[in-house]
Length: 300
Image 1: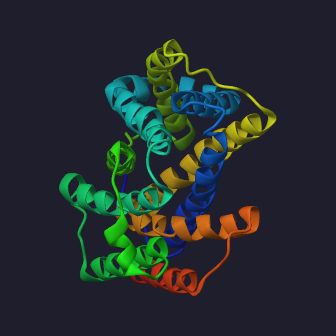
Image 2: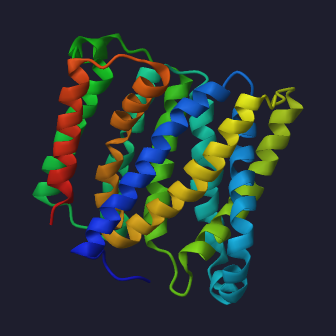
Image 3: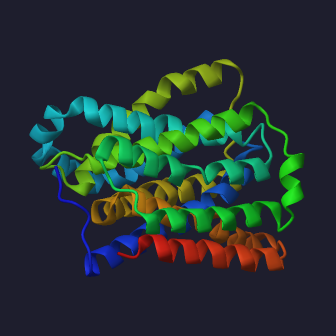
C-alpha cells in the first residue's frame, strides 16, 4: 500500500490535480444534456469508455505487461474498482438525467463528498477534524445557496422521482470508487491502474448495452454526439480520472472530496460562457462560500 497523503508542495499539487479533474467533470453535465436526445444512457457510457480505453491503449499496454504480476495478484480488486467507478457510476448518472430535474441532480450530486468522508473514516481510518467539518458545512451552505438561487423556500417545492434514487446511488458509488483508489496495490503505477480498471469496467458495460439495444433504444451518432463522446471519453474519463487518482494519492480522498464541491460553480461558469445563462448575486455568494469552505478544509 502507499504512504499517507503528503504535505507541502505535494499537497499543493494534489489540490490542483483534484481541481483540474473537477473542472473537466463540470463540463460533463453540459455534454450529457446535449446527448440525451440522440443517445440512450448505457450507449453513452459504453461509447465514453470505449474512446477512453482505445486512447489509453498505446500508452498503457507496455506498463500493464510489465506490472501484470501485481495486477493478477489483485485481479478481484481491479474488477470491483472498474465495475464501481467505470461501469455503474457513470451509467447511473445518465439514467438519472432522463427522469429527474436538474435542480435535484445538482443537490444530490453534492452528497458525494459527504459519502467520501464517511467511507474514508469507516474503511481507511482517516480523521475527521474540526477544520474539515467546518469547511464541509460552509461548502454545503454554498451549494444550497446555488441550487436554490438564494431562495430557501425552493427546497419545499422539490419533487422526487426514481431518477433521484439513481443519483443517490451514483454519489455513493463515486465515494466508494474514491476510497478504493486509495487502496491501489503496491507495484501498480497510475497508467497501469487506469488500464486495469478501464478494461474490466468497459467489459462489464457490455451486458447492460445488449439489454438496452434489445429494448429498441438505438444511439444516433450525429456530429454533435460524436464531439460530445470524444470530449467525455478523452477529457472526463481519461484525463480527469488520472488527475483525480493522482490527487487522491497525494492528499487522500477526504481532502479531494472537499474540492469536488466546486463542481457546481464551474458548471455555472461554463453555462454562462457556453449557454448564455445569467449570473445572479446568489452565484457570487455561493461561490464565495464554496471557495471559503474548500480553503478551510484543505489547509493543514
